[in-house]
Image 1 (cartoon, chains in turn red, cyan):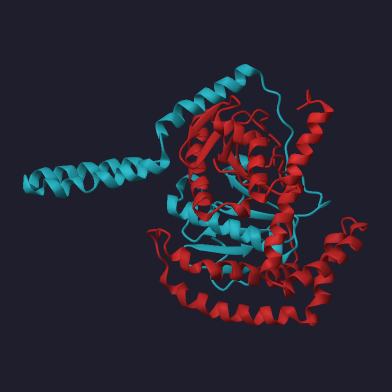
Image 2 (cartoon, one colour):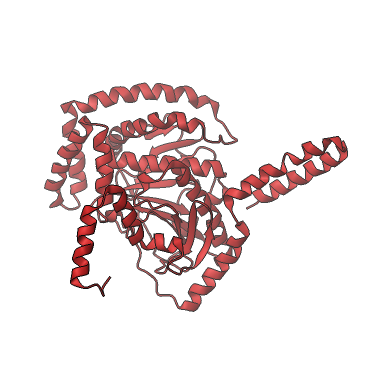
Length: 262
Length: 176
């Protein structure tokens, strides 16, 4: 790219402007380093590949034996990846993790996904990190703190309806998934009962009564950095608006996240 | 697992998988997806269950984006003591992320000599080559099964022997 003359650069910029969304996606693929690795245009240390995914050694490893697992198709963020491929990816990482444990004689592995620039995603291509771990290596070392029960309850109120909405639509599809060998029959009724509860909760949430607790909750987030507080409150308003308009808004939101990497 | 039926922090459960809000977590709003059946580490979880857990984890991640207004999510599996696993039950952690949350879920690239890189690569590659194709491996299993039925005409003894062999082969594959 660096040896392009200014004229060429201008031409390229104009070209990008004229592109249709499909063409733009294709262009992104061409620009994606990992797509080029998958296509074999850039040499890599490939350890595994099948029709859906490919595993290569990370050139900037966190530890010795750090493997990247990439879907062959170009997805910039995780929500874009179809269920089948998501499942397949973790299944492959299970086998690779087994190999890593055996060959490198490490005491554990981390499977890690960074979803969004803020979460540490550095490339435009969705991937799984498989990181061999030894005690005291201080990689991905996270401290656990006790989260207040009130906060947990609020998180539940916020996330549960969304999750059920997502799963509710896809529940029929999930039935077609291969069933696992062990079944615990006693829970089936409960799930049905829960659903109804959730529906009620959703209705409540759209009313304005719910707003104060949300603010409270975000303020506790803000305790760590008080400057952030004002920003967070603005965000609450944004979230509220999104809740009222379902459907199209969701898709826009995902695209927004994707656009962070452009 | 410690968290069981009717626990207030459980937000979803079906026959195989449960999803709950973690009480001890790196940040408020961390949600964990775990199979109900007890498996200590990822390697012990059956393929289908692994797939289902991860699909659900993706859904949780989406729900966190929408419900909590998170700007990003991290999915983390701590597999083994050395990897920071605290509860001996396989689980996928979904961690909501926002700007300035102070979490350091990153790493500094390690400077390894080309030799070290190569040994790690070759060791993994050698074993991974044996895997061939995980998808195909399953199909091979299925192909082997119907064989005895075809040979039934030739004699029952043959089929019995083959059936046993297949069973042994299968149990061999299941060994960690």
